[in-house]
Length: 305
Image (cartoon, helix red, strand yellow):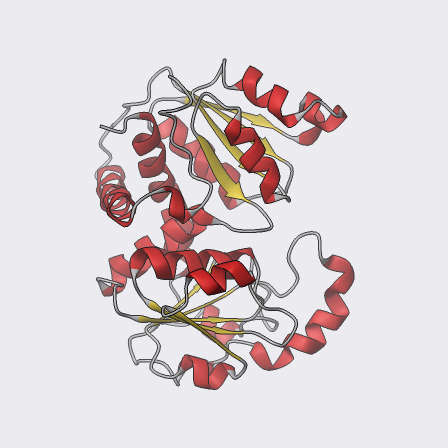
């Protein structure tokens, strides 16, 4: 496979809107297949290399289980398991690894690292999360909304909390899936300025979470203190206190609005227990859909036709 033809998934912009929708349709089919207990192993003999520089529960399990269910296998690499942790240039690791595996998933801090790896990889590279974005999670979020509420195009989505990697991915999704996004964040915690500019016309930045939630079809949030930001925790708890997603906030939204959270969640911080464990929450479907959406993505990248 020449690198010219190699497709990567580093952001939602790496696939066209039509391709993203076909991946989600396929994810729904794969979910149904699994529910019926039917074996489907198109990726026999294929190997996924997984590089983790950031801790993970859902990302590791969903990719590892997904690859096994598709008939392939995966190799888990923590920083101490590779020469990357000892200073081997990322470009060298990419060339070596892509000569031995069929697909690479990377979960790391700096987004530039994933881009550098992909630029030298002869096989598809999937972004399993960076400090900049989390596109795989958005596939699962979109699948979850469509599954429960139908078409998301033209709907109103509200992000409340930190303008972090998840918020950035919602900005990408607003462009690709054509919904209106309201981002409610405290001053100083805005999402990426370039992405905000790119999503102009689709996204609006607000300060008032109540106003942002009004008539929304979907309300999403994430932890206030992301991995690597622990030393800011006390200040963040103060700054984000008015941004907790409560039943009162949910009551501003449409009666059939759903709540999503990529997990892990801190009840009593970014979301009340009443909301995340309540009838409008779809977080457990959302977590499971990581598996199905990523299986569809891996199929797409390895069998594009």
